[in-house]
Length: 634
Image (cartoon, rainbow, N blue to C red; front, side):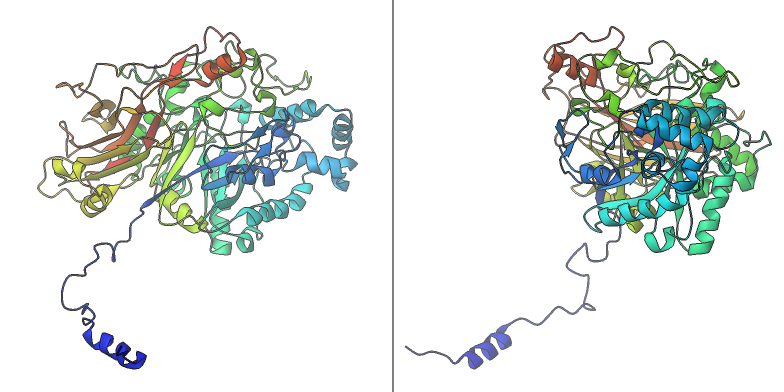
């Protein structure tokens, strides 16, 4: 048998091989080679407290440190305070442990006996309370000091000692490309009990973060002072940082008020600073949903999701009607359009995310596996009827600390919500941060639906059926969080919608576009359009589908099936009432079919009665960041 020498064989094959394609000869074969848009949605929680937060440590979280919080988010098993193992069904992609900056690490420093802390009369008393096992009183004094005390609770020198540890914790947990651990904290301004809290998140690693110390509401409760701190950080380090407002629903009308913190008028400089440093807001979390409320949106049958209307802020004062517009995201977005015309800049041009605000170190937003807000809310029979907060507030006749919770504010009123969906190119601090800055984000109440929302002028109906909606969406317009480009000769904007159900969750009921605009008289208006619905239902001439999707929930067994609804919803929708002379915005809300609420799961598992006022079922949802239109152009 003849055998060709290897050298001759190699030369023969080389000569026989076709010539390499000439890149100058024509269109590249791969349609993806030049693409540069985000193809990945990453899931995370930007608001979790560990045992290093005084209120968390005072409410049962004695041992789950920041390290445990990061481990849990990565999908590792953690032992909860009730001795049971707990693990996420699916790991998260990113996490911010946002312990309060005001007395960061108070419990660890009391336990270590930090000299300047225990040298003071108050510090020594807190250390004594801790040795007596009265952690709830220590946490209560921290909570009371934020909204009612004059001056700091204790000497805060120990925070300088704790901050490097916070940075080190995140550095150990950060695994670029696989899991992102952000560095940051919570700034906890609470004047008179009005929730003005923000989570501060840094784009950077240890080298830059070590050059500053956390700014707290003890230095100033004014958000403008926080933005000035962030501006100084960026100028000093060359890095990036943002603040994320949350629980606007408990701000007593102050989160989105139409004046500055000191009562002065809003200015263009104020609007520009707020837009620069607060590009997103947390629209849903455990202490209630902040998208909208029935009082604000009476024609929206889906407005009443996790609504907390019984209080006028964290101070538990009475809630009054005038507070609503300054508390909820939807009216704030609309009023931002009007303020933009007046000021020349929109102070409320923000995108949306969700997060939990769990003080358990456990980022759980799953109704089937809900571990509460505080460690004292960990699952046990009868937890639903207990007060949601176990803090022991101090007796102090000199200040008006509220003593009782409003009616209905018990553990059952907590909401198993939510998560942040972020469209980014890779799972790194820089890429995720940049996506947050450009508002390419959406909020969910827990499920991980895949949601795309694009706005443009020339999308065609068949684009919704394409196999690669993202390529068409980016090529023809802007994604969620963007501003529509020049109108040209087109009559009205068109929106490309694509929603895929959570692969481990419920089917979809409908996709809706929420439109807000300023009319010719300067009034803010809103209207909801159903743009895609499941089943054989139809959308009427008024843009609404009035037929409910149905329900498959077995309340007693706490189960449901996907016998109704759709796995995917897609559409191209054109605004039928567009006025090119008026500013407007549009965002997408996607709804699942009804599923059991966490209180229903609890009742089935423990064999207990569900509180009469606790809803049996709910419809989980997603809210995207808006897309804006301005008559003046982008």
